[in-house]
Amino acid sequence: MKVTVLLFGQARELAGTQSLDLEIENPLSVAEVFARIVADLPKLARMEPSLLFAVNEEYASRDQLLKDGDVVAVLPPVSGGEQTGRDVFEITREPIDIAGLRKRLLEGDSGAVVIFDGVARDNTKGRRTLHLEYEGYTEMALRTMEQIGREIHGQWRINRVGMVHRLGRVDITESSVVIIVTSAHRGIAFEACEYAINRLKKIVPIWKKEFFEDGEVWVEGHERELMIDE
Image (cartoon, rainbow, N blue to C red; front, side, top):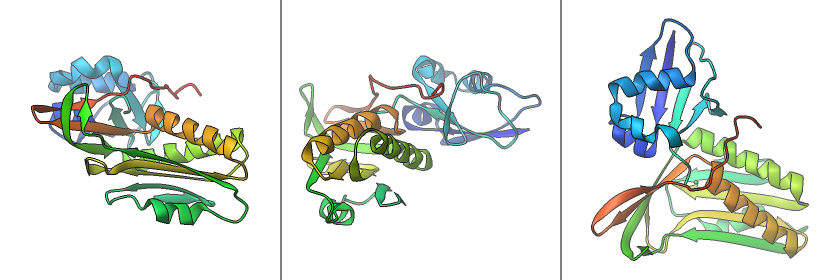
C-alpha cells in the first residue's frame, strides 16, 4: 500500500522536501509512519513532541491506522477561498481587500460590524522585524475556518462571518489576517470576533516565519487544541 506524507513549515525545511511517497506492506499507524520518516530524516526527531498530524485533511491521533492512498500531513504547532452560505472563508496571496470583504458580508439586517485586522509589526522582543512569511495547508485551513464559522453560529446570534488569511510574504503594516463579524447588536459581534481569532490561532494550519536583520525564525503557537477526540 502507498501513503503520501506532506510536510509544512519548519518540518518541511528540516526534511528538505514538501512531500514523500511511502510504500508500506502492512497497515501502519500515523506514529509508525512518522518513525519511519525520522529514520531517514533524523532532524525531524526534535520536533516530534510538538507535532500534530492530519489524515486526509482531518486532524488524526497518532495511533490511527492508515489505508492505501491516505494523505498524512505533518503539522507544526499552529501560529491563516470558499464561501459557505453567506459566510466567507478565503486564503489569498494578494493584499486583503478589507472594504470589499465588509461589503460582501454587510446586509440590512445588521446593526454592527466588528473587524479584526491583524497586521505585521516591525519588532518582536526588541528585534527589528523586516517582514513576515506565512505558509499553510490550504485545503485543511479552509475546512478548519469553516468549522470555526459553524462554532460561532452555534454560540452567538450573529448574521455573517468572514475570515481571510494571507499566505506568502507580508510586509510591515500589511494585513496578514482579517476577520469580520456582522450582527444586529455590537456585544455579540465583539465576542464572536474575539473567539474567531483565538480559535484561528489555535487550530488553523497556518504558520508564520519572522525575518529579522540578524536571522529568521518560525513562530510556533504556545496554545493549541487537539481536535482528535472531539
